[in-house]
Structure formats: C-alpha cells, structure tokens
Length: 392
Image (cartoon, rainbow, N blue to C red; front, side):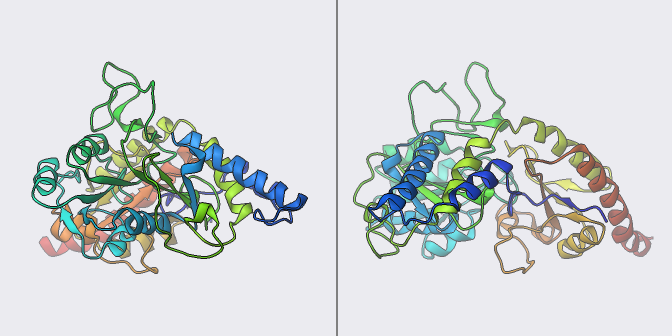
C-alpha cells in the first residue's frame, strides 16, 4: 500500500539538506566545550548553526539558546520571563505552555480561534505586570494569531510577550524584530500590498520566540529559544556546566543542531501548499465536512475538518487503514485521542470530538491530496451511512 503522510504538524519529513548537514557533523568527534582542535571544530559547527538560525528568525546569535525542543523552549520562557509576574495565556495554547504555566489566567478566543484582544487589554490594565504567552499559529487549526497587536498591547502595559512559533516558523515569514520590514496589521497582512495574509507575520515584537527543529524538517530532539536583545540575565531551567552562556546546562547535540539550522535555511515558499490544502478542503466539504476556522488567517498547510456524527479516532483509524496518515488534535498526548481543548475553547461542543487535522508536509504532492480525497469520501460514506439510516 502506498502511504500518504499528511501529519506534518506532528513532525515534518526530514529535509535532504538537514540529512547532509547531520552526516557531515557526525564526522566531528569533539565536544563544543573542549578547547582542543576537535572541540574547536565542533564549536565552529554549533556557532555557525546558531548564527544561521538567529539571522533566519531576525535575532542575534548571542540571544539564541539551544534546547531539547519546542516544549523545553516554552518551559524556559515561562520559567525565566515569568519570574515575579502573573502569566496570561491564550485559551488555545499548546500543552507545553499550559503545563509550564499551570496557574495562568486564560485569555478567551472567538469562534475563529483568534484571541480576544479587548479582553487581553482589560486583563493587562487590571493587575500587576504580566507575561503573556501567545502562539504564532495554532498546531491544530492553523489559526494565525494577531501577535503584532498583542505585542503592542503588552509593551504599552509593561508586559512581556512570549510567542510559541513552533508551527509558524518555516511556514510563515517570522521576524522577531528588525528594520526594513513593511508595516503589517495584527493578522500579518502587509499594508499596501505584498505577500498574502496567510504567508506573512513580520515584526512580532515578542520578547522571546520558541522554535522546534522537527517542525521545520530537521531532526527531533533540538529546538531553541530566541530572546529579544533587552532580555538578559535569565535564570536557567536546567543547570549544569554553564553551557549556552549559563542559560541551559548540558552538552549540546551537535549533529541535531547542524540539521536544525540546515532545515531552517531550506524552508522556502509555502504558498503552493495552500492550493493543495484548499483542494483537500473542497473534497472533504463535498462529503459533508466542516472546515474549522475557515474565516481566520491560517497556516497554508493546515486544515481542521469536522465530520458531524463521526468520532475523530474512528476517522483517523479508517484513513490510516487506507494509507492516509492524519491526526486528531495534537500529537503530544502519548497516543491518546480525546476532545481537543482548542476546539472546545472555540465553542464547537460535540464537534470538538469529531474533527481531524490534515497538515501537509513540505514535500506534499497532488497525488497525496487526490488519495486523501478518495479515501475521505469512502470513509465519510461508510461512517455517515448508519446515521442516515437511523434518521430515515
């Protein structure tokens, strides 16, 4: 059976550029912290990767901290930036943020999944200084949050903003801050023309940004926290030998870091994925599906499809047996399939347990979408026919 992998938001396929960089790094035996020639060679690879990633995402090399992945980057941000501050998080934030900020105040979202900026403003006005955590783009629905507008609110109230850019990085133009960027609205639309809203998110104004290698087409096990220049003296979450300028202990995974940087540099125009996604959506809607968050700006590769009356786990299994790999919600719950807190926060009720996520990888093809469309039609007909019979 030909397999069609449509679960990129769980993990992208490894890019060939990342594979080549990792193989080259494997030939280096030194520890980047060692002062001999082998250690210096390892250090050179690591620092070149750090510089490439920092430049790619609009920061400074000295402000990029390597971590074990996006989860640790989020946890480090909450730990370091949340000291002495109350924490506010969006209702649809990833579980990495929800777990790191267990006592956080929740900022609601609308039916489109977008944060309610008026509520955020009120919350910022009625309490001590805060740390706000807001995703750049949601991992389940793909909704692109109005990060620039949230950042302006935060800065006007003395609050800090951490942005989980794990899903958005590599699929959107993500620049932490910088000169020469065109002015944008909160949805990322360039004022006066330019790239489409679904493709651009410039000048986030964030104080920190979380990144993850394997969501870019790099290896698992490595990520980064990119800090704004004014953020200094952060307390480490993991203590050890003083690596990462004392901000994160432990010997860095050189091979994975090399692949991380190569994957980030290889990320290109994701616009072609939007056309494939739209085709997949049209096919699903023709079978009775509902596209969740369709009216909001979304990632070009992501669609969340609810099929009324059909359990999400049943849909995932049926498609898998047909060679189509999709998911129900996030892939970070130890294999469990449960009603999504994201969809519940969007007010979907029973539909929250009847939605699957289709996320196209960087190497998706029309053949993948055609296979999905055919399989989805068969599945929908089979799963919905008992409902039709009972209604009759």
